Length: 518
Image: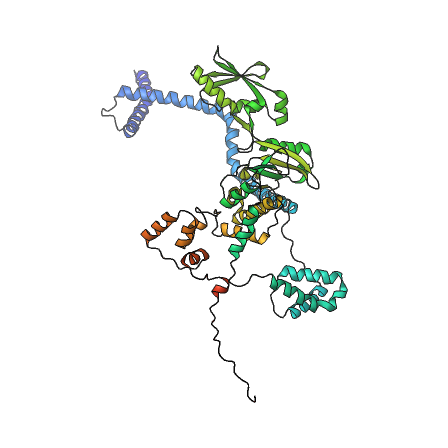
């Protein structure tokens, strides 16, 4: 019996701690699971205990397996912070060096561009001889203003011919006499003189609209219609044209010049491929021409990408590089619409430029002439010289390059149209017209919609065009006219406040005083 009691005590000893463990487990379950309303029974606690043990065993086995390989990977990120800090420092140094190299490279590129069309050269310090001659000229002029250009030209002449040093006084006197004789008199009607000098030769200009200017293949509007276009400040000229100059190797190498021409000239699908309609199957087949594709520098993939832009179609490349097009909603009407849109489809080039001609000019290399104008897009192309590329569209020049460039463009275009007809008009009169057109920062027309329509004088506006409307509007607004201009004073019958009419001196004519002693 004693042995049996010992066995039972031995068996009962391990049972007591197990019951304690179950109680602790039950407590933990009570803490973690708050939503449960019922308390767990002893059987449920035992089941939870067994599931926990199984989970612990499986987790231990997984940890043992993972310790062999992934631990190495987990150790690496512990070391990474030090390595990453070093790598980051190296990367930042590399980035800084890259930025410096980029800035240096960009500066070099800008310098290269500037070298092609350099800005005005910095004035070098004058030699002692030139300084002496300049001082003598200033003494001889006696504080009378002379332009810098005239003074420099005198110095250049005197430097070349040293015998003129003794005659500087006489030279300066003659120059001052010529300069003052060419100055406009005070209160002179320079606007009237300028209008007459441009208007009178304009009556002798031919009325033909097209002429071969420089390039025989491109028609450009010249003569009186072109002059009217310039003065009216038309938004789009009747025949827009561009002269595109090239840089560096592009103007020497004909292949590179052709590449730029292909980028600029607009190419449609009909230029590169044949479009065939299959009315039986309601399908369109596009058969590209390989020779023309090579000339234009195009691939079949580029053509396929541009074709896919059209909506409600499915395009596939079949054998022999034929593009087959099927419609999502097959019908003869849709087939015709898709066919027309394919004919007008742009594959490559710049909008607005229809045709291009490459010519080799003497002392210049290859120059591109285009029928059509798009200055903003052409200037973005690599190899195009942005300093000399020009267009006859004045408004696009004003948008891209500013109002001063537009002013110079008006002067150049007007002078070229007049001189092409053999009419010699002084450049200063055209400059005056260009100044009036661009005085307020925008290109204005000389007409009732521009300069003359914005005059402050009511009578001068009425004298130009639409007399009754101007007078009615002025009376409604209660405007007043100060009669400062020419037209309004002539209408009223007063002397004009210009020239001799501006002088208001009165001389009293009395008996001449006799000298004493007679």
